[in-house]
Amino acid sequence: MAKTLYFDPSTGKLKRGAGGKGGGRPRRLAKVRQQFDVTWEIEELGHDRILALLPSEFERFKMEAA
Image 1 (spheres, one colour):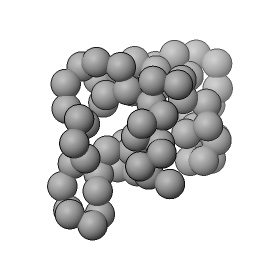
Image 2: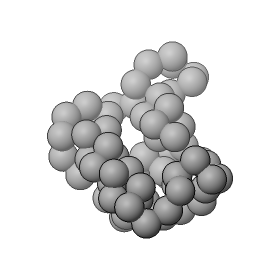
Image 3: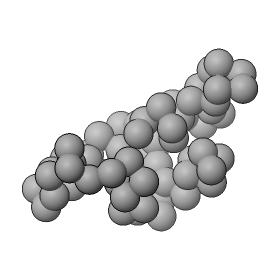
């Protein structure tokens, strides 16, 4: 999931803004994943379902992943 959000296959590099600790960044994704673990069996959810459950702060990276 992180690769889909933050990696740009056309350049082979991380997407611009994928570093740091603000909203929608990888550090925040780790915290959101911990929250999801409390409610769902993450391993049983599909990749697309997890992306759909992410808060709006991840929209920028989700739009670029589509």
